[in-house]
Amino acid sequence: MKEFIPLLEADIKRFQFSGHPRSLYEPIHYIMGLGGKRMRPMLAVLAYRLYRVDVESMLRYATAVEAFHNFTLVHDDIMDKAPLRRGKATVHEKWDVNTAILSGDVMLVKVYDQFLSLEPAKLKEVLALFNACAAGVCEGQQWDMEFESLSRVTETQYIEMIRLKTAVLLGFSLELGALLADAPAGDRRLLRQFGEDLGVAFQLKDDLLDVYADKKKFGKQTGGDILANKKTFLLIQALKRARGPQAKELSRWLSAKKFDTRKKVAAVTAIYDQLGVREITEERIRTYIRKAYQSLDQLSVKDTTALRSLVDSLAAREK
Image (cartoon, rainbow, N blue to C red; front, side, top):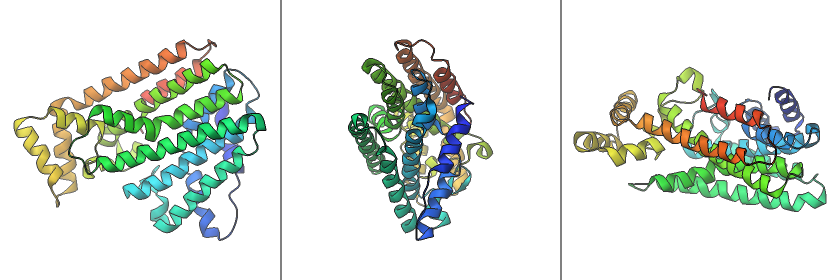
C-alpha cells in the first residue's frame, strides 16, 4: 500500500479547486489538505490493482471518491456541531456555516467533473453506482438524525443506518476500482460486500474510539457521542442491558439538561464498563471483519494481501 500513498497525495494536490470568490474555494483546499487515512481512494486503487497494473490511469477517479467523502464530512460536521476534524478546526468553525455548506456543494459538483472524463462505455454505469451510493449516504445520515428523537433504537436499525451512512461508500470505492479494471461481475459484487462489511466494522470501531481512545491520538473530541446522547452501538447495548440502579443512572444522565461534561462522560463510561459494552462491541467488530474476509476468499484472484493488510491496520487503529 505504501507505494500508492504518494501517488494519491500527489493527485489530490493536483485536484484543482480554483475560482472566485476565494472564500468559497479556500475551505476545500483546507479540508482536502488535512490528510486523513485516505481509506476510500486507497480501496479503489487496491481493487483496481488486483486486475491491472496501470494504476496511474485511474487515480483521478479514486481522488473523486476522496472529494465526495470530504464533502460529506463538511456537511456532517455542521449537523453534529463538531468542533474538530482530524485534530483541526472544522470548516464551519474556521469559516462559518453558510460558507461550509456552499463549499461542500462545490466539492460535489467537482466530483461529477472528474467522472465525466470516463470513457462513454463506463460513464453511465459508474454514475448510476455513484448516485445510488450518494443517495444511500444521505439516507443513512437522515436516519442518524431521526434516531436522536427516538427513545429506543434496535441494533438491527443501527447497523442498517451505518451501512448506509458509512459502509456503502467503501463498497462503492472497491466496486469502482474493480469496474474500471474490467473485473468479473461476480468479483465486483464480492468486493462491494467486502467493503460494506468492512465499513460496518470501521464505524463500530469509531463508536468505540469515541469513548475509549486517547484524545491526542484520536484527533476528535472524545466522549462527544456521550455528551450528545448519540445512539451509538455502545449506548444501544447499554440501554438494552441496564437494569435497576444502572438503568436509573443512565436515564438520569440521558435526560439531564445541565451537567458537568467530564462527570457525564465518566459516569456513562463507567456504566459501559460495568455492562461489558466495550467487549460486546469488540466482538461485533471481529464478526464483521470475519465476514469481510469471507468475501475476499471467494474472489477469482488469490493475492489479496494488500486488502487484508488494510483490514488488519483498521482493526488495530487508535484514531
